[in-house]
Amino acid sequence: MQLSSSKLTLCARAVATLTVAVIASTFACASEGADWIVSGNDGKYQRVEGRDTYPGTPSPDTLTLLDASQFPPQVKVQVEVENGIQGPPQAVAITPDGSIALVGAPTRYDHATSKLLMDSFVQVVDLHARVPVVSRIEIGSHPQGIAIDRAGRLALVACVDGSVVELRIDDGHVTLAGRLTIGQKRLAGVSFTHDGRHALVAMRDEQGVAVLDVAGARVSDSGLRLSSGVAPYTIDVSGDGKWAVVSDVGLAGLPSYAGTLAGDADAITLIDVSHEPFRAVQHITVPSLPEGVAISPDGKWIGVHAMDGSNLTLDNPGRQPRGKVLLFAIRDGEAVKVSEAAGGEAGQGIAFTADSKYLIVQFNVEKQLAFFAVDGGRLHEVGPRIALTAGPSSIRTAPR
Image (cartoon, rainbow, N blue to C red; front, side, top):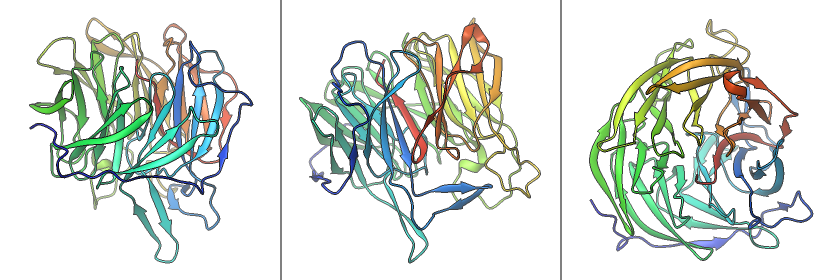
């Protein structure tokens, strides 16, 4: 089914009331050699001993821009946006040149009704402006995962109504181009293949991974579906064009699950994208709720950030104080666990630096970004953590 824009309208407006904090005194997004990484941070939400809380005087939601071309990574810009923790930790994206960031999962909490409100716009952050400018594009459904292709011209947004929205990026302008319906229920993560000819979309509620065909201005559903574990969530693709990996968050990721969960094992899925048709080749057991998953640009490593019971209440027998960061090596077409380290409490996303030497991990409850060295397969935390004013909930690198 080809994307069509005939029934879509564009609504973009500047968000003049946002407060912008420029961390670096001088910053040029077009600087050569940068390794741009964005972190979306939810200030309104706080998990307290496994329970969801919304403090009466919250900090603003923010977007943090990092340059990881040198270690430790440096914070370059922080700007107020609307972002939420509900959904896969891939609700942000940044163009290859670092000029534009896209932010999804906009949420607000209404204290009068004690309800979380989910909005239906994508935010566009112009990082080339002297003072970063935030505008909105109305897309008609709540956006979840976002991906930008390596050319920096096309973005795909996975939505909760089963649609994928197409955004065109041209000379600093972002426009709504079309919508493709691939399911009837919530989608989650989305990633382009390295050559830009396909995209993978996690069908969170209907199960499996949808493969889209991308040919210039035409985006269509190939009809191919890949096997996954229960509730596929985040998706990442290696820069060598060989592999993709999907996190499967299990029963906890399904809507309105009525049972009680005690931190049982979940899975990640390894997909061979080196030739068509793509195939899921391995399902790997990991601790519960692998919220974040990443594959190194060189295609050698997989990083996983699993909650492992650290999201549960104190009276749950599966409760753990901290989650786990896991490292897998890809050898002879299979993923093999080689190392693990203590993670954060109910942690979120994870991403590799461009040189494949470090993992950046979101510690949501602690409101910190932590760094782990891969070190030839020996995973260990290094360097000072970066403290944030809001809980990090989504992370993405520039396309590689």
